[in-house]
Amino acid sequence: MSHDISTLEQLEALYGQPTERALRKEIDHLNEDYQAFVKASPFVVLASAGEEGLDCSPKGDPAGFVQILDQRTLAVPDRPGNNRIDNLRNIIGDPRVSLLFIIPGVGETLRVNGRAVISVDPALLARFETRGKLPRSVIVVTVEAAYFHCSKSIVRSALWDPATQVERTSLPTPGAMHHRLSDGSFDGQAYDRELPQRTQATLY
Image 1 (cartoon, rainbow, N blue to C red):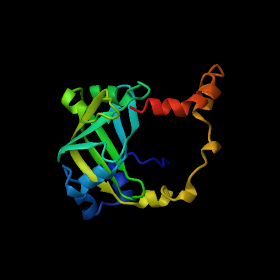
Image 2: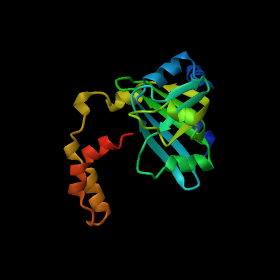
Image 3: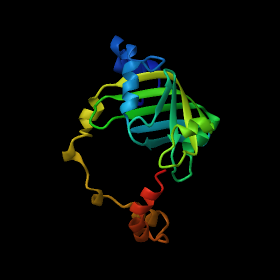
């Protein structure tokens, strides 16, 4: 006997139907309440899909860094990274994206689904100038659905409880991980020594 759920009928029989409140939380634009969450969030996870696979990338900056152009449009600056640009590659092939807005100390999160384009409009880039530097591009998202999640996952994880914070020294350092991935040919200790200064120098 298979214990896998493979049909919608099986799935709905297991979980039942969503409540009316859960359905009403989803709207096709950003109302005043949802805009408040976007403005307060310094951290967003952007999910995308393409021919080469899936991607889920963290995006962070001071709160409000994702700008609201109007009720149906968001703009996300793409700051310097490792140039893998997995999410940008995906957007070229499949514009569907999902954003999860997270606010420190707050249990509720906001999910926004929509379609994205990659813009290098000079006027738009200029809106995100920081420390005299512009983002390479801006991801412009047309909102198709916005939905707030209740706090249960944050409460269960105790994410904002200082007592649950993990000591960084209990985990492998970035240099150690690069060292192992290179079969020992990479100088991980030098990488770790230089990392703090390099991170600050390449934030923007």
